[in-house]
Amino acid sequence: MQIRIANRQDEKKIRALAEAVAGSAGREFDLQGADNDLINVEANYFGKQGLFLVADRDGEIVAAGGARAKSEDVLEISRFIAVDGEAERADIEAEMLRVIVEFAPRMLYSGIECSADLDRNLLESSGFDRSGCLQVTPDF
Picture (cartoon, rainbow, N blue to C red):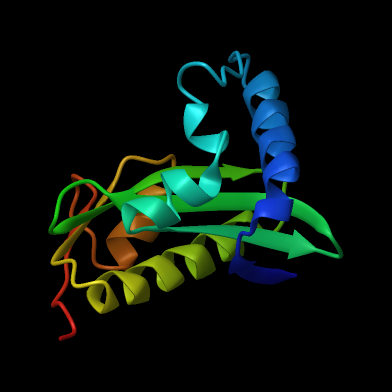
């Protein structure tokens, strides 16, 4: 299993994963609405001073997560999806969260907010407050 930065070639697999996760949750996958950030991951995350990560197991994307600028000073973790029943989900979440938390100060953010579906115990153990916010010191 490898956690890595997503690339354009991953987009089709990311959308397929998101559609499968939405379907198993009884939610409609909607590229014209709530899921439109997955139409062009590069523009919607990297182009908005953010990042998008994937968990790659032998060429299969089993999880994905992204964060992008909410404001000039705040990075928002806005998406996390994983294959239903993924045994390593907690480890994947923890590693992706670690990468995002390390990324934020380097991009001169002073805060991180999480609106994605991440385990609240994991967030709190990583320093986030109960509302899903974490203050960081920009690394000039």
